[in-house]
Image (cartoon, rainbow, N blue to C red; front, side, top):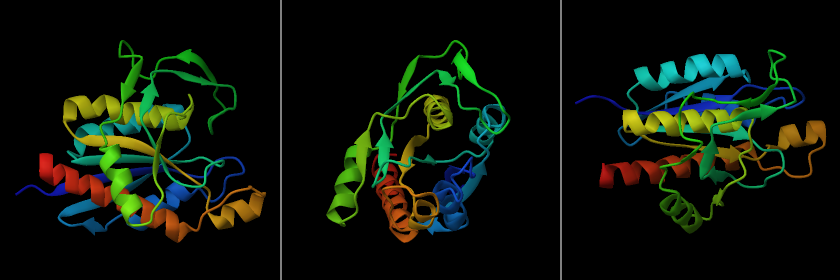
Length: 208
C-alpha cells in the first residue's frame, strides 16, 4: 500500500520576525506521523520567485493526501483557517530578494478566487471540543501567505488532495523580543496544528 503523506510548509524568518513560528512548527513535525500518515515538514524562503518555482514542484511530485501551509500573523492570538485566496500579488514591502509586486497573477489564466477544501467546520468543532482555539477567517492579504495558500488550493483541484493555509500567532519568544502585544506559547501553537491535522486525517479516512 502506498505511504500516506502530509506535507506541512512554513516560512523562514523575515525582517524583524525571528524566529518564525511557522518554520519551527514545520521542523518540529517533520518526520512525525498521525496514524498512518507521515509528515514531511518543508521550510520556504519569503521569496516570490522561489515559492513560484518550488511549491508547484513539491505539490506535483510528492503525491500527498493532505497539504497544509503555515504563516505568521503578528496580530492574532489563535490559529486562523483561511477560507479563500486570490490570484494576485500586490505588496510594496520587498521580499527577501528585494522584489515588490503590483497586480501580478500568481498563476496565469487561473481563477481569481479559490477556496480551501480543508474541512474547516469539523476542524474547528473538534479542536474546540478539546479546548483548543482555532477559527475560520478571510483576511489572508496579497503577500506570500496568500501566494502559498492559492498554490495549494490550485493544485488541490488536479492532484486531489485536501489542502489549505493557516495563519498562526507569534510565540512568546518572538513577541517578547520585538514587543508584540499578543503571543501564545510554541507548545500551544504546536498542539493546535496537531489538532488540525488529526481532524483532517479523520475526515480523509472517512470520506476519502
